[in-house]
Length: 239
Length: 369
Image (cartoon, rainbow over all chains, first blue to last red; front, side, top):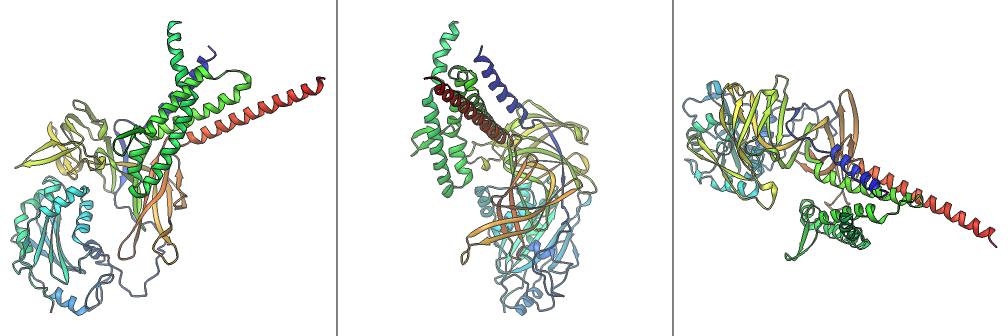
């Protein structure tokens, strides 16, 4: 009896500990907040000189995000990127042209956008397309693909990512520039609310990013037109 | 009586001091080996091989007991000691309390291993977050977003899904009757039809992509329909209007507070790019209360059951920095503190009793000729 009581006490400690600290089972309910605004905390980075434009990032999205905040002065090279020469960049941008697919609506090209297109989608909502050029490798294809996957809420392991990157057909534009075409609807499925088509044209000194975002089914149905758009890109040759 | 006779030798064997000594030595060896292994192979690999395993294969052939085996052996040894070795006399009271403290340590280890939740939260400077992501676990989540951008989520762990089970999401009036559940599967399409093909489990659990098929009821469509969901897909709208969305995604760990990163600093050793320290200045907002905290490598943020460790960082080319925190929710996090207090109390009691006994004996020997 004298040994049973302490042993029972030990078992009780085990039991209460396990039970009280168990993880919740079943369906959990909680709140998430999307796009939390930056709080009013001070920016501790060194202040830019007055009238200095904001610094765009290395990615097409970061460059686009700088739109509307402040445009770079004419002939100003993009900041934070390895640009061979400001005038060369300007020439490269102004010499680029492409064919807008039938039924697509052309919008205003502002800021870092060289072109802006809309694919009417009816009840599914329109898909938005942007054309942006960035100097150099712009972070590399794999890094950009990984980020786009993250934007779609997708994660691929190393093997699947390599398979996705190598499964794309070897294409080139009508002008003979290498073209990487990335069909994210193959990953998200056509029923996905948000999917992407991305074309990356290697212009030599720069990359042109053609990116359409919209409902999976809408984009899947416009894949052929999107491919033609990317293939029609011309100009952008270095002098 | 017969049972007692049969059990007694077994309990005496289990309560052996040899098991205790060998167990403690093996535990020390595993700790040193696992720590050194971590340097080249990373924390996760070391955890899997040494600290979460029953056996450790040496040279791929020779099995040695892993930490799990050793801790269970020590727990049984301790339990058996309570039954057959300890003498329950007042003079031994301190020792019994000390060993109760050791029991609490083992309970704490069990609770942490089986019930603690862990995730990662990455914030750019200026960003705020309320949810961490567990990269090696999966959940089936349904959610709806309101006009203010607030999203109500109902989620169930993928490990809770079994074929034939019905899972209800009462907030959205939706239920799933599960048909097939695969911990790793490939999604293939034939025209508009989709199917899941089961795959063998991968060596690294984070490479598995689970999937399931189920009969969906409710969700605005007003009728039953087949739902096939895979971790290879993104979010899938359910019902009409696309307001209710489902996804098989990495498990979310909601935080009871909002964390805002407003500065990350990496200090390097002079003349090298080797990091000397990382630190993140954050604010923690919980209800109306807000406090500023500095999280650094050995200085985590503790908030209720949650602990946030500085674990990684990143930098964009425009100079913006991001900081990654490992978030651990451990309902048993106070058990080691309690165990330490009970153990110390037991030792103090034991030494106190010993001192009293020694003093009494000394006095007795003084009066005796």
